[in-house]
Image (cartoon, rainbow, N blue to C red; front, side):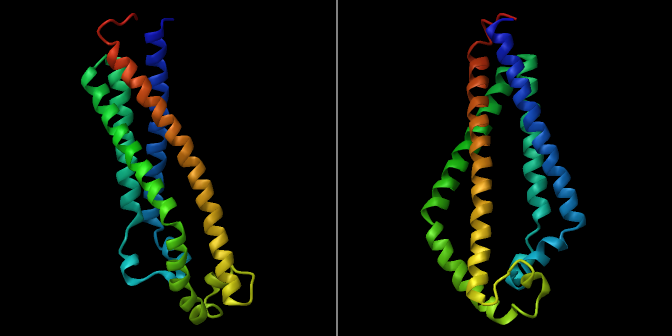
Length: 193
């Protein structure tokens, strides 16, 4: 098997991963639209009126559809030998990687600022609602609202680290997909099947 054929196979495998991810998000979107109230119930007293209008399911659907479209572009571009589809795939993945890097930089730069805002926002709600809301009382083992806030903050930090690790793994796959798609694009004319 030649290098070009191997790159085509790798490109199809990358796009199968992207397709599975997109379909997973679409399934999550259906679940969120059917049972969306449970998302807001977890937030309890922290959910403001404006936050209740945000529909998580639509976001999941948009990202899932984009991933399915990307998988289609990548697979068809590699299989059919279309330079246009490969270049479109490359461009979209490159924009996504740039957006992810920018989001990570902003998240790192403003993490302490976000902690101060969360403390100012959550402390009054904890003082008012702690004992009266069973959903809020159940994640907190502490009897004082300050200890409860620290528990909530620690839980958010642990989950943020998990999400960051997954995002780093996805970024590595995206960069590999960029390299493979550009290799296929550059060698499409002199391909050796």
